[in-house]
Image 1 (tube, rainbow, N blue to C red):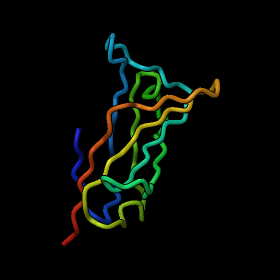
Image 2 (tube, rainbow, N blue to C red):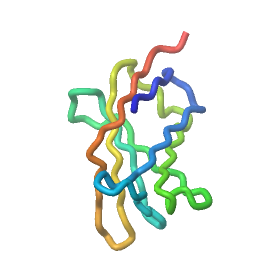
Image 3 (cartoon, one colour):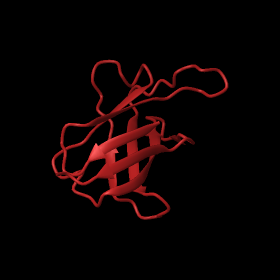
Length: 108
C-alpha cells in the first residue's frame, strides 16, 4: 500500500492491518509496542520512527495506527519506505516483511 503525504502536515495517519499470510488471521498485538520505521527509498538511514497509538482494541484486532505529530513530516520531499516492527510483551520481535511506500511532496 502507498501513502501520499505533504511535507509539514500534522494531520495524516497511517493505518496498517497485520495478518498472517498463510491463514489470513489477524495478529493480536495487544500490549505490544508497534513501530513504523521510515527511511528514504534505497537508503539505510532512518529518518523517522513512529509508535502506534493504542486506543480501545485496535492492537488486539491487528490494527496499528501511526499518527504524524508536529515536525514529523518536516523532511525532504521524495520517495520513502516504512517497516512495521512489533515488540511483544514476552520480549519477542516480529517485523512485517512487506514495506509501506510513502511519497512526500512539498507544500505550496
